[in-house]
Length: 507
Image (tube, rainbow, N blue to C red; front, side, top):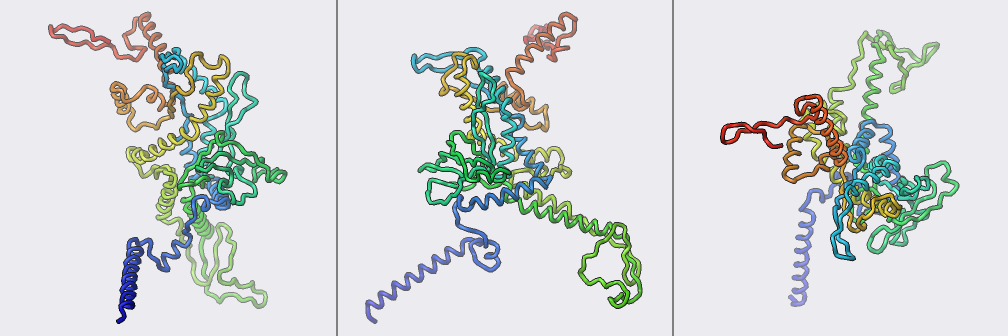
């Protein structure tokens, strides 16, 4: 054989063997990568679109409308969404200023913050939060994030703010109003609703002058304002790399909630039909015909209106219609589907079904532990996305108002703070109280965290407690009552010393 032909054949055989190995390696590793008529139908809607193309304006609009409709017509979903927002925000995040001293960069010396200055700043911020309704707006934003997929809050100047107080306020927008008219997608720095820089950071948002669903939208359908991204709070869940706009978090459970609605209506219709029919009277006679004056015969599958308490007539004997719905599996089926739908939001079973009938108290509390961890993570995200930015904007304005904040405060670069939220109910308050006491003695926690879990300000609570103790001790002395009668403090316990005598233990 020609040596050249032999060489060509060997090369072809080598490549053929390698191709078989590659094919075997590609298609034999994963069952989900196999192709068959059944799997092809199951994965027919899978695609390779990137995050922003997959979440196109049309797709997001459809999902928002369906999620809103389901929320407004489903008590389980409506209650679950409100519960998550209520648990996340509670009565509102509480600010705790941490600084006590700061280094002066001009003189290189340590400067002391005036006593009580941090608490005065906290009180001022609380007043502003109540005036603008910050807690309420944060709850609305998170409910909107779950149902619409994203929420927007623009930091604005409120001209109606009281004199000599910060004019900062938050104006909420729905995702429908954050859009770019005539978006063509030719410029890679633009996306539906705004612009970004070369690093992928959003630098501006486009706000339509009127909501597309409002009555007056037709008067100016294409007018919009461009606002800097530094003034906009965008609260959403990013699921994929490069994703900018959000989709409803309840999306994986939307069909499940729809199935429950359909199943419930079917069960209800069947039960109502059975309840309306009192019995069936079967008559031994030939069926009527359409000839002469006889009433027209009812064809098979015709829809016949059935009045309540009716007695149906057929040809045969008398019998009673058995009600087959709801079945014994109805409740179990509904609970399982609600559990799966609520899992999309990280909700425990008893929260998704709004029932703890199958729980004891301990197992119900245990089921909430992953949920509470999720809430903790969300609070961390909320701080980065919204709270810190809002507080810095408020502080930037507040320190420029004469007499509004205490004097001799450190520069903004030296400020530090924490946020505290309402805590969850305890399963064993006595054990938790002992744990707090031990952690406090060991330096593992602070009074601010302990008081914060119950929605109290630690400094105000301590001052109030000090006044109560002082008054209680004064009244005990005046009325000659046993120590601790009014203050709630335990009387000193005697201790035995080495010589056998007793002496009062030091307080």
